[in-house]
Image 1 (tube, rainbow, N blue to C red):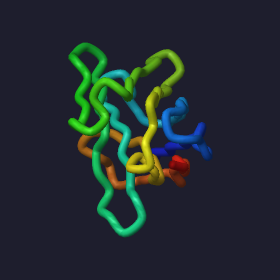
Image 2: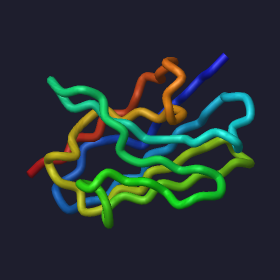
Image 3: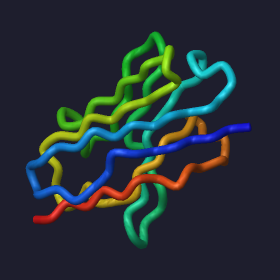
Length: 114
């Protein structure tokens, strides 16, 4: 059974930083591409960043150079370091496999005030 627990969100001013964490209970975690997704109010959920255990990370254009995804396979944990945040980054952030397995955690709210 898949369990995903996201944390680290909060309210931050534009230009600030946050670090999100995701504790994942997933079999063969180290073999699975893991991603951070986000869903802004009234919009569809989108993949923001993806990390595999051996390849280069993927980022959508709007976060390149500002966000960094990383993973600790020994801890079954995925991180998202977010710098230079803007109001457009305001959303609920989720982690999941890529492609996602359909079991979503509660997410963590990120609110950036301009």
